Image 1 (cartoon, one colour):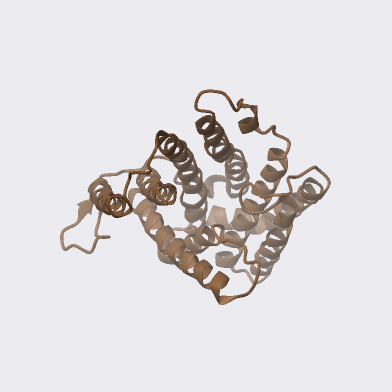
Image 2: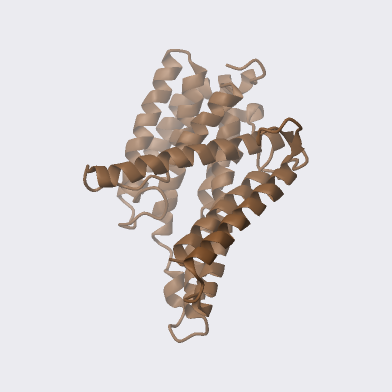
Length: 311
């Protein structure tokens, strides 16, 4: 446990870890299995499959509690709570009507509105499990609860670019955005934009809106809620690594066959996302907020969608 970790956070979790996990299990089993759930995933998995990672993490948390290791108990408990909240969300979401299908096919810019509702609307609804997770953490950790749900201080200085003189994170954003613009322009010039149509522009606009929403909810979850809780019982470095690994794993694509052609790209993607998660986690910790990591996340997502749509 770090020297500045509030004792109340550790004691609150240690004293109620088993009870809170048992309550989540009692609620989770009927919700995941008895209520109607979509056959496909809206975020991590289809709802019933949330039970396996929840049970594994719950057992790790209980083992850590038995060994009196808060550095194991609290991260495992918080991670288990994530899967509980999102499993409940998947079930709830399966009840919602398909908003995109309500847009008539002959409506003006129908493809744009369908994509906007399907992507940005779905991502925005993930505020529900995040809010539930925040309530669970606040209830269990009491006055020891820590979060980074505010914008933070973009003027905070950093040496992340490796230069001798420190610069503010706001300047780092401007510089990296400039680099991304150069790469994007170079890509478009090489690819050619002759086939780019108004439909591409509308699709990209919808993807940008969805990317902004998706970037926000992921920052709220990983850097806003999980990372500060991990830091209660771990030094900042290991806490950042842990949230980055979690962030990477949820972007993992399922492998249908254990062939090199399928496994290697996913391993590369895992490493890339760990790197992105570490960068965003450092930005969140040094600015003590989410504005800067959200901007970086949005820039990266925008570049990815532009690359895909320009193919």
